[in-house]
Length: 132
Image (cartoon, rainbow, N blue to C red; front, side):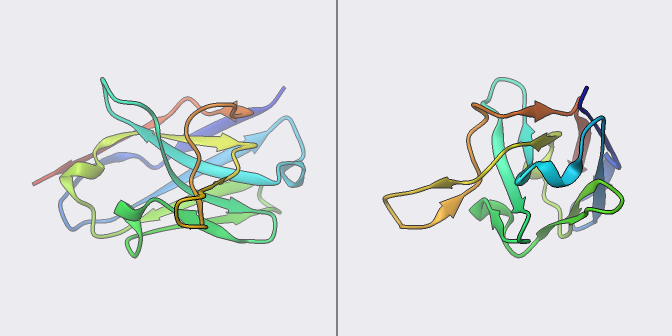
């Protein structure tokens, strides 16, 4: 049984940093070609924030480019999200996801983090709150 457990969330002032971790158990981490971070605020759809694949290729939603960094340690079976220069609009529940590959956009010919559909596995989430 696959289990994803996030940690590292908390409260921080605008401009601060947080580092999220997602520990994967119950399955071979390398079996998941793509891993991702999503976030969701009440009343809104879950939003793909960043993805990373087995070749270490990454994608980011435009609103976090240059501030967030996704990474992974396959030996430790752990996914990370380093969040710098946090803004109040980054406040959300953050979720780790496995088997979550980026979507290709015909509009710009690039890959982007996926929508929250057809995702293999989800973690339970960790809250991030950024105050102004």
